Amino acid sequence: MKKINEKLILEKMLLAALEARKAILKIYQQDDFQVEIKDDLSPVTIADKASNEIIVNLLKKEFPAFAILTEESEDDLSRLKNDYVFIIDPLDGTKDFIARNNQFTINIALAINHIPFIGVIDLPMQNETYFAIKNQGAYLKKNAEIIPLKVNKKIRDLTVFTSNFHLNDLEIQMIDKHRDIIKNVVAIGSSIKGCYIASGKGELSYRFSSNTKEWDTCAMQIIVEEAGGFLVNQEGQPLRYNREDVYNRGGYIICNSLDNLLL
Image 1 (cartoon, rainbow, N blue to C red):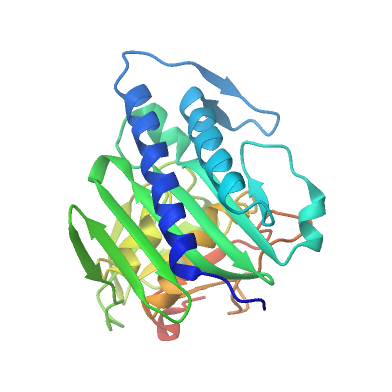
Image 2 (cartoon, rainbow, N blue to C red):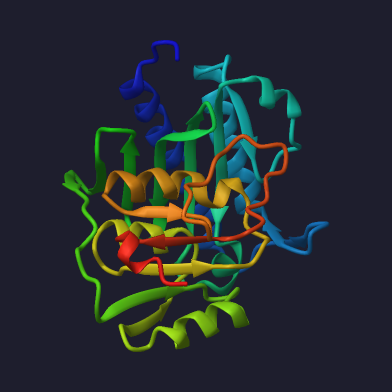
């Protein structure tokens, strides 16, 4: 791997997230905003598009040699020949945004040689930004305070985070199967689930559908891992990135401990 300035890259990713946050909140505060339905039947708003333009333009300008994979731009498969790729969801939780439940995020990650290396997740309505660099820990920035993140050690009385809109029967069955050690089931939107597990507010989240994509998980994975947790497939292996097929076909599990990889 060539030498990169990790701190500078993180700084620019944080700046991109902050500028995107401003644009998203300006639209969110409007009485009404346009919603379109994409070919895969998922919704997209002008906020998704505005955020995408801000993030992509900034990162392209600062790091022109890096490839970009983002939900709201056409996929350029030349990225497969690049060891460095930004993986971006400019507005994760569009359904939550439309429902105005405040549970949406901005996800920006850098994967190097298929492995998550730097991650930023911004929670606009909570005024919180979670970030991590590989082997350098995970942190929460709130106002001027920087707070180190660490998963908790619980293996009983677990809190499981589920999706507001995408909970499926297999996930319900898995939760019911382990009700002896699962105490709380909390629905929450977007990649906030991973952020909260990284910060010790919960222990487990299942996602067994095949419709999530790389930009849903990449930033979340490095933040969870650097906090001491795990984001893995059903075989217990970490997800890899910059794939030709961007779908996480087998879903994933987030957990504070492999003891809680409950299948």
